[in-house]
Image 1 (cartoon, helix red, strand yellow):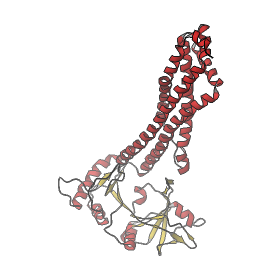
Image 2: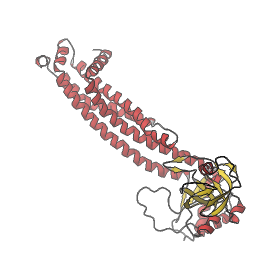
Image 3: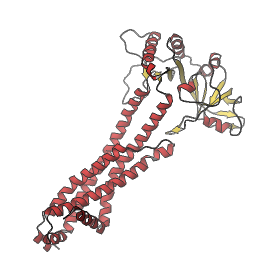
Image 4: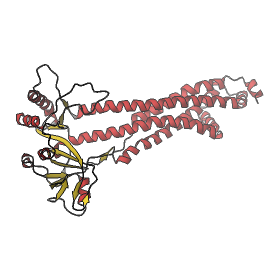
Amino acid sequence: MKFLEAFRTAWASLQSNRLRSALTLLGMVIGVFAIIASVTAVKVIDVYFQESLSMMGSSTFSVTRYPSITIGDRTDEYRRPITYEQVERLTEALTLPLTVSPEEWFDMVTVRYGTRETEPNIILGGSNENYPLHFGFEMTEGRGLSVQDVQYARPVVMLGSAVAELLFPNEIPLGKDVVIKGRRFQVVGVLSSKGSFLGFSWDNRVIAPITTLFYLYGGMNRDIESVSIRANSPLEVPAAMEHVIGHLRTIRKIPPGQPNDFEIETNNTLQNAFDAFTGVLTIAGAGIGLIALLAAGIGIMNIMLVSVTERTREIGIRKSTGARRRDIMRQFLFEAFFLCQIGGLVGIVLGALFGNLTAVYFNITAAFPVGWAVAGFVMVTMVAVVFGVYPAMKAARLDPIESLRHE
């Protein structure tokens, strides 16, 4: 029997038993869908994370008290806060052409202008004149904070784009006064929009001079969330990191031979930590999908065994008219192959669509896990071979005379 004829015979057999074929197909679709949907959602998050890091630029690194991303339990001993006084001393001590920008979050506030006001979910942050450059923002209106604003603790703010749109829908916000925690702040600029992710908006924020917020909230010795340091080019980052580490160890009085009691993080270190986290999610999702695939494979084998029993007389007729063992075996293997490949294709398409609902919902870049899609096709092919061989061999070994007597 030629391969083309075997394909046609297998396809006709599947069409003649549509309900059984559909149920078998469903198990395969669910298994592949579980794998592709989970890894697609993780890849969407990973792509967004990479895009966010790229906004910061490869010339920037940060100093934090503890790692930004921790996998498992943190076993670090207590670390002293990184204070603003230490940041100022570090800035003064640097001899390389580096810029420094602290970032500290003080409160969740309501911002009011006239009769309009926001929800009490606006992040009130403090920084200095380098904030837009270091954290990937541009000024769509007005200017950023100035050195004098920070030096003299002026009551001025930069508004996030969402805050500006809500409070000033039909007028220019520059020079206007907004009220935060009962105090007036003059708007000097509006930050560009960066969207939102996982319910967190980059645009629901207002940034004031960090010194101004120290006067409002106190806590000059509070721990600074992050200190961003920027070099002129990516090639200068390694030397800049060593330079900063040396000065910061001196400022924090860390004895020689003792490990740093702070973290230096670059885009690469953050990406590696995030990759470890997403890797765990990917493996977990793929593991669940693999279990579903194995269950689907067992289901295919059982249904094909039932099919062999139901079609015993048909097999006997075919053998009596000249069909050989390998012809019968080939037909049943093709049936398993058809079911698995069609189920795999449907599962991949549905899984990719479902996984990218994350991208649609959060308005971020969609992604497609090409490697996992190829792996999905390979896995379903293996399932077809592994779980289709036994029923095919059983069908091929049937005695034609006994088969013709079967009712």
